[in-house]
Length: 122
Image (cartoon, rainbow, N blue to C red; front, side, top):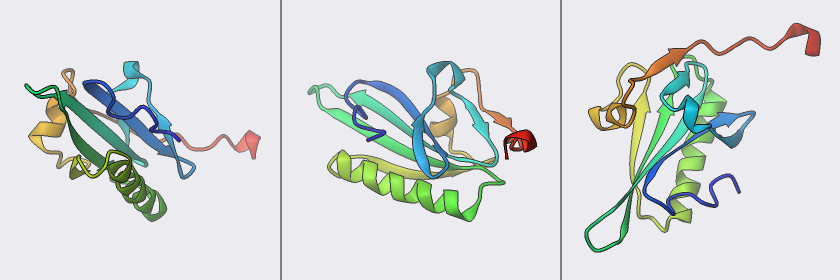
């Protein structure tokens, strides 16, 4: 399962929907979002009592396909179930992100054009 370690530690975790599967994004690429894709972003914080609190965002790029939008929503439900209904869920749309979401990325958000598939590999 792509999110088997989700929310275990305080911090930020990001996944990208690729070929209808959820794939972890390397930390070095956090804040970069392809406009043709969808992402799940989980912010986990430990409160004073030592309990983990979760904020789950699913981000939809402006050029994201309907299939990937649906997959992101399904993955958000699955992650919510995995975390026993504890996350506060938020839907984020490219260009209209909440301050909370944008604040997770100290260097800001970077929108990237989704590369076209290489025609030589088809």
